[in-house]
Image (cartoon, rainbow, N blue to C red; front, side, top):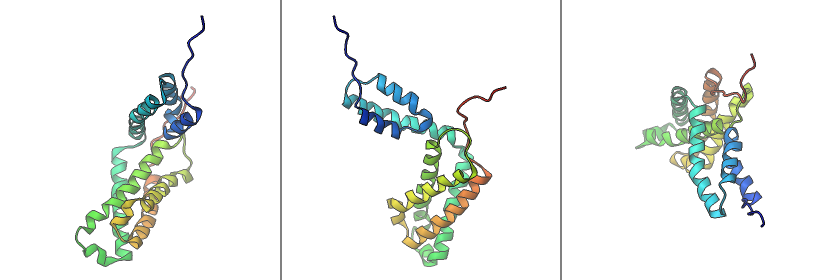
Length: 183
């Protein structure tokens, strides 16, 4: 009698899914998804179910709520400064202070996601700037930029890049080494 043939996900799909999983969890999660493969539809469904939980888990491990609040306040302040520098009349419009929160929140999301997707271990000082850069790019390429005038978005993003980088130098992201230190 022949052995039962084991079903395997297509390599291209498996590689695409692996790219969506944060590096610190990639091997285990991709391996579990591979082992439970039954069909392409089931694989995609399971990936869509597991991926948000894995990302949320990484965010919880790499973020400190107090530092996130400091980052959020510094980013909001950045867009207030950007509005003051670029178009002070904007601050007198209805809902302007609320509208400034959208690009600040988008930048914060970019910073948090970059931390979650960063490889575990020590991070050099220049790499601390990657999160704010990702945040600025995300803010400038999403609908959050539409909430405020373009020049306010650019000035606020520039000031936010400086302030959030300074916050990250003073309060670096949490570090989880890949292996335990040897005694």
